Length: 277
Image (cartoon, rainbow, N blue to C red; front, side):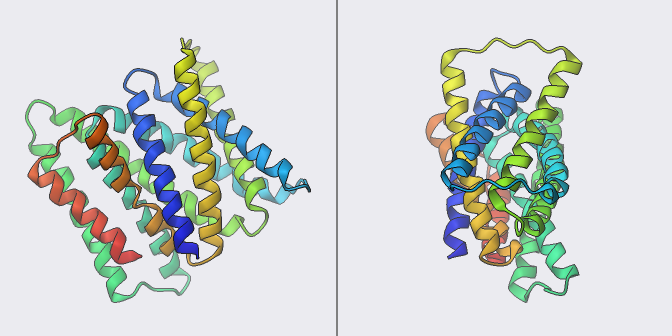
């Protein structure tokens, strides 16, 4: 059953990544992240209230704070990378985050099988092709290379947050999710205040961000069910198939095309995720 929740997570994340990256082309990634975090926490509070019982658990914060900080930085890097690089490739690089939970499971005595090992090799082979391809590009080599680097850094942070989430979700998943989003929101707000950033937003942009917040909240809830229903490496592997949906949306709505090498790179990363699952 956990696999189905993970697939739903991938659907939600693919939608959020595509539209957040798309909005970051015309708005600051910081503003996009702030509005999504605000909307997400509001929806999670509704979910918590509908549960009927609300008990504050201070132990949850010991997990929520590091996850929230990691995700805040990762989202800023990732959304920015999506806005300046090819969405299909950047989302595929983001999918390498699954490697961190796999390493974690290995360290605690749940070593990956031969098929899992092949999946890890496929993922890193795909990333290597992406990086080498970006370094050989001509006019946009700097932009492409920087976007890939940001996506790799974000992937490491995403994967680390998944491991911490798996450990902490045994407390209270919804409370943990609210704590995470609250820390994210505070982090974005502090950056806005320190940088004295001023934004102009339209009603349409706020509406889109609110919908993304709902999708993000739904994705997190599904992932919490997936993580509790099985190993975190398997749940993450399936959840990080979201690049498939991001690529599909980018192809349909913004007519994004990929080079042959980029298609091979993307396919290798997705194959790795499937093998890990």
